[in-house]
Amino acid sequence: MGSQAAGDSREMIDLHSHILPGIDDGAADIAIALEIARHSVEQGISVVACTPHILPGLYHNTGPQIRAATLELQRVIDLEGIPLRLVTGADVHMVPDFVGGLRSGRLLTLADSRYVLVEPPHHTAPPQLEDFFFNLLVAGYVPVLTHPERLSWVSSRYESIEKLVRGGVWMQITAGSFTGAFGRTAQYWACRMLDDGFVHILATDAHDNRRRPPILAAARDIVARRAGAIEAEHMVLTRPRGILENVIPSQLPMPAAAPGEGPPTNHDTDEQSRRRNQSTNGPRDHSARGFFGRLREFFQ
Ligand SMILES: [Fe+2]
Image 1 (tube, rainbow, N blue to C red):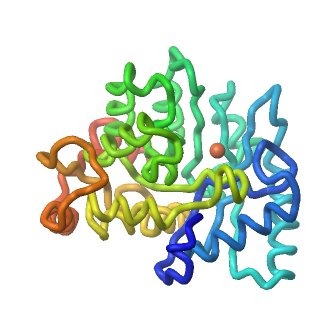
Image 2 (cartoon, rainbow, N blue to C red; image 1 turned 30 degrees about the vertical axis):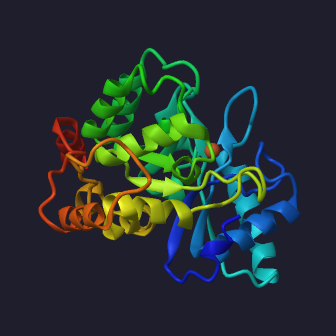
């Protein structure tokens, strides 16, 4: 899988990966972790964030443990001569005292930046969903909500997703959702959110090299056809690099809606692609910013 992208020199950064061996449901051992690393490099990925689950009762990972495991895997990757840089992070579930956990170091942001991956429950929308995310924003963090397109409640709570985006919450779509690896429903919502200008970054959420491999280039190319090559690069490089450098969101390009292009499809014409490219080059409507975004920037 992904062989068509082998040798692709366009750089990408993957900010969601369960590559650390033996600490969650991701890579089972060091051999699989190295397979993920090699496959990532083949895709053109230069940096991978190690983001194991932090979920009390199931995955008892903590910041210091993840830092140590990341250093150890980087040591082995270097010994193997694989040109891949690892940074720390976590796939943090909506645990109590989230802000306190970040401040104490028990929970980790991405590369110690202000950006933090947050994974909501898959099958039930939490009652305090919006309050939870806005509390993080007011505390100075930028929550990056993981794979909204795969949540079973996205269709019934899409207005909440929209409100979060307009408030300054970033959305991370799983690359495999665009390629169809997670089924037609996830593919529909990935395309719908892309067209609505609600997608900030793509990431692999890789767990192994077979069932859930680190596929990123194929999704970037699908996004390039729908939303233009520039926007696709923003999702796999510009914004991820901005996160690694802890750039404030207002200094990064925000996704723009692409109105009037019809229902989501993976077969846009060249003309549609060209218009989308123009729209990403022209003035942006800043649809991902709103009152809460400006409020957050004020606090920063
Ligand atoms: Fe994940």
